[in-house]
Image 1: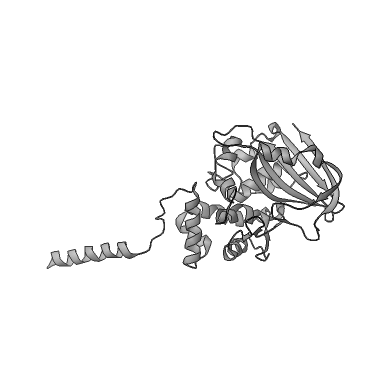
Image 2: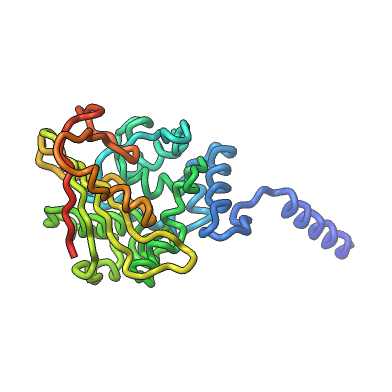
Length: 301
């Protein structure tokens, strides 16, 4: 009798394990697009908050996001972005997902005009639109930036050993491009390798596109190390100086190759009376298309 009861119990447990939908079953690594697409699909299909899906599947990333969201100064370094890819003609991040991510940081922007920092880091991890350059998350899950800058702790990645992706990206890019660096050191969830990094050794070209109301800054940072089987040679950091309120805002950052670099710094595109337009999904209230301004290149070595 006892053997029969034991056998029935084993069969019930086996059947339960076979039929129950379990998370953490994904065989893919976080360095692969399928991993992130599966997390996004699970959130949509189960109508579960993306942060809950992340907590169950990737506790380390969950803690990154949570710690970043508790830093009251983090979001102030970033401007705004549109949630629409003009090339793909598609929404970049699912409206519910970006809404939930912004809510964690107490951001009230709508789903069309969003916080650029949240969008271009954590948001991009869960973007499922494939562009000619790959998925938007490629900049963070590919080894280009961490190997290119010699960051052994993967600080510019969701797999960072210390800090959080948004905090790390903010500190790294802000230290390079912001004129006023007095508050960047207030960030709390930043990796030690970024705090101690020698930024003075970096070669940076700074394209400034100025109108009466604002200056668009495209900083092109040469990667100190050549990454094998990777054509990218520079990190592009896009930021805006709003003269009307005397404030600088980060917008986005991603690696580019030499061909793209040459187009940006082409001499024929420099000088006065140039058409100045926002790019890379940047949004600035009060800006207009085809503003006339001056475009100049400043080199720093």
